[in-house]
Image 1: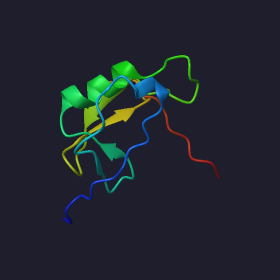
Image 2: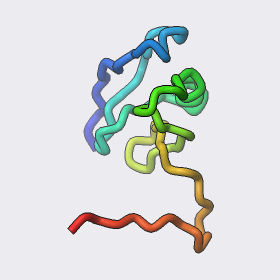
Image 3: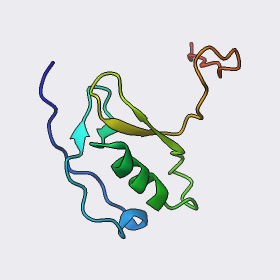
Length: 90
């Protein structure tokens, strides 16, 4: 596994109250990786909910890089049959 590279995160006005992002890395999935859950949750809590482009609603630990990411998908426990169906465009 290659070492994650540090990337510059886009800090918009809704995140202006937080300190500058540190130790945010790029994952092989293309998402930004936060070093711990607290950091990811802090960025999640500071997002402008009136901005329709920001739909993130929770954080999760990545199985590929071990960092934390933000996602717009709702939490569905494993083993639940109510999982949302993902349809691929054909």
